[in-house]
Image 1 (cartoon, rainbow, N blue to C red):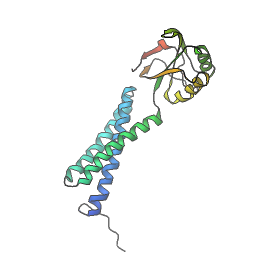
Image 2: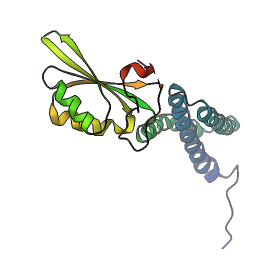
Image 3: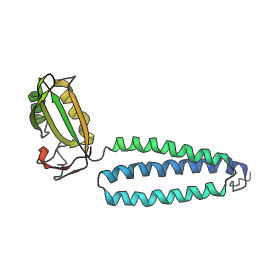
Image 4: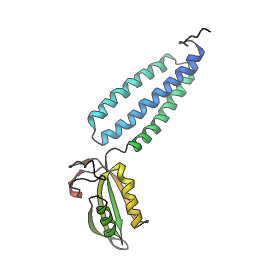
Length: 199
């Protein structure tokens, strides 16, 4: 049996293989673009620049194929579908990678000291301060940690006070590195050591 590779002009190539290639390439380059933008907010300039090169290269390849096949509606659908899917995939990848640091802020009217002690016992560095809420005094607990460690820290917090109010912000840059064998805290983890916090 003679097996031939489909080439441009072949219906199978034009309406199946080419749209699939455009879709997959578009998913790849948009996913890369999503991660690149997030890396820029984390000040990962070198990695972001490298990903930008790859992203544009893939985009040029894809758009060239679309322009060559302007009468092929399947190419349009593959291009648009790849863009939407790539955006979603990029966000999922970024969540799985969990790059960078976060500022965890906890506001507790009753168990702030206990929360701070439990986090400290687990190896997290914390800063506490007193505050005044609409219903009385509160204790505010801060900690800066790796994003991938947020779940572990919140499990400790929820164990002490399940209904506690908290907020999480991206820490764009910190003035001290994080110890690799730590659960995710700064070596000199006090709030005043944060250079910039992305709001």
